[in-house]
Length: 107
Image 1 (cartoon, rainbow, N blue to C red):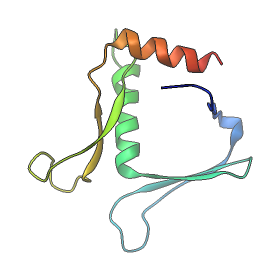
Image 2: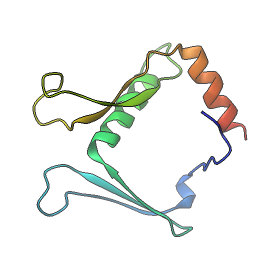
Image 3: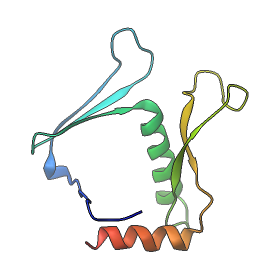
Image 4: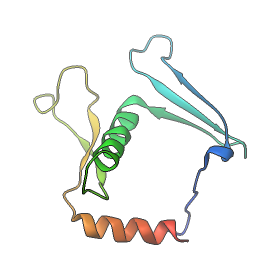
């Protein structure tokens, strides 16, 4: 991963956040409206993966980094009701992940 186009989004950069279930859908989306005019809509599967990574790092007594990568799951691999595409652990060493993230954070 390269870190040329990093955007560090802080609370003060956010105009508002809306969690919603679109009409005709079953899963939550998150609309993130930034003050600079950019709007992002995040799918529930993305949010779920981000939340898993966050909780695995923030609540673990030793762990300092986690990396998830997108993977298309077969029907036989996933639980009922889960999206076909999921974020799953990459298997990379925690030290490598942390080194890479630190480089992007310090830019």
